[in-house]
Amino acid sequence: PTSGVDPVSRRKLWDVVSKCQQSGQAIVLTSHSMEECEALCSRLTIMVAGQMKCIGTTEYLKHKFGQGFTIKIKLRCSQHSHTLGQLKHDMASHFTNCSIKDEHL
Image (cartoon, rainbow, N blue to C red; front, side, top):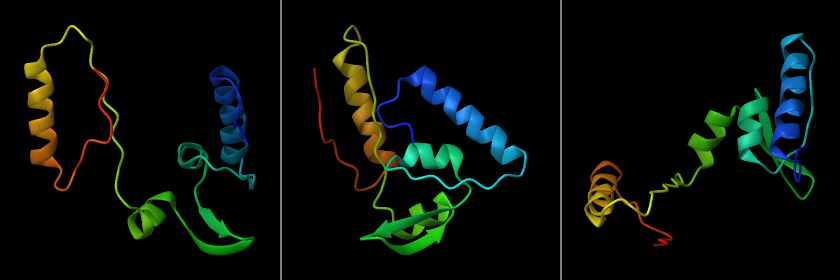
């Protein structure tokens, strides 16, 4: 429901939805944002061509159908290349089969 909405308004809307949930009201919403679903939903469904394909918690759906994680890391330009090299090494040692998609220097 908050696609294209500024961050402050989005937070306010999320707060209203959360208060409604806490009062025991059931809420049905649609979203393409997994972040929004994680923040607002206790259960969700995935629909394809108007048909429900699966239903469950966000954790269940991620575990069953997820294809990994995306990690975004931003470093200040003033940091040395040694720090970047160490970061790459640490990521590779902790996360098998990880890869760098983009690198902007």
